[in-house]
Length: 436
Ligand SMILES: [Fe+2]
Image (cartoon, rainbow, N blue to C red; front, side, top):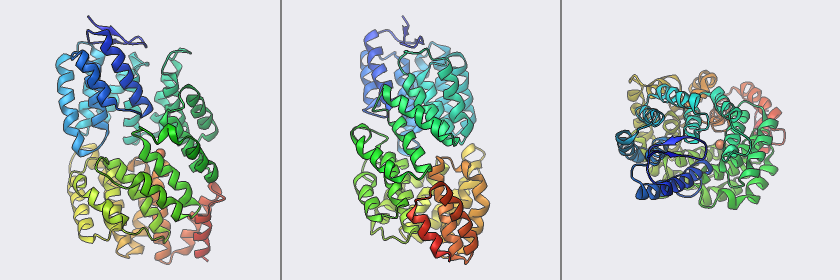
């Protein structure tokens, strides 16, 4: 006998007790806390036929973008596909399968089909939002949760999570005041909503509100740093304010506490670590032997490229560590993958390979080449995926390449534009002085 979830969705399954456990796991996914895989397993221990639990696990593994976890996603999908009695569930499985196979647009269309008929399918909305993020569709980051919100009755549980997604979409669209208000509203519903905490942090980053940002994370530390699988990225945001203040000591203290690679780091965690160390190194700051450990952690996942954002950050780690040969091998590997026909290959051709080559040129001291490559790549930066704050590493490198190439007026032009968004940035002010 099928089950009905609190938002009116019909689920394949037979034990109401399992549904409660699944709802707890879904809450973990949406708030980025706890152990959603363990929660879904607990639901399946009660009711192995609860397809949504298999789907939740499949999506979590598939969207980790971590090569070691992708086979687990495929196994969960096999289980879901064998059991799914609801058309909505079969479309979920199709979305995850497409994502896993690099058919990003097919995955996003499948999610859209689900949400057209079931706008309160939180599992679909959450992973569609992630697919829009990693699939480089900025307008959908806002449009999709906005449509869901319009179909969300006031008082129905889960609304805060939809607001948090809306807030991030508003932030990436540059609508900062609306984004902050929406995210703060979501936090009223759940102070531990790590996506909402992160949306406010993005607004502060883009507006150069460094002191507020530092306080924002310090005051809410228990809500994002404890038992939270989105913690590493929030540590990164916390450190960025210190980068802007040109305070490497504070930034590196955060790196050591929250970003340094460890046994359970996934590739996206390593990307945040590389991004931070690279920004500090660009500023002329000594990062000690941290790049070496980070490059070693990147070694294995970088051998199986699966996402352009990870691919270019692996290059940062290799060149940052001075591993010239490994960096050259990585570039050659990306060039080879770029000959494929899927979306990953296309994104590598459009942005990944030129940017990786620019980073290698920069590290080798070919500043004019790096500057030229990054100038050409910058208009296509959204294809690298990631947020505006994450992609900022491109312009920061471009500026340093311009200075190295003697193109000081070009560097100053970029720096003056940055200063209008971040008038209190000590780092930008210092770099401007270097331009004379
Ligand atoms: Fe972020």
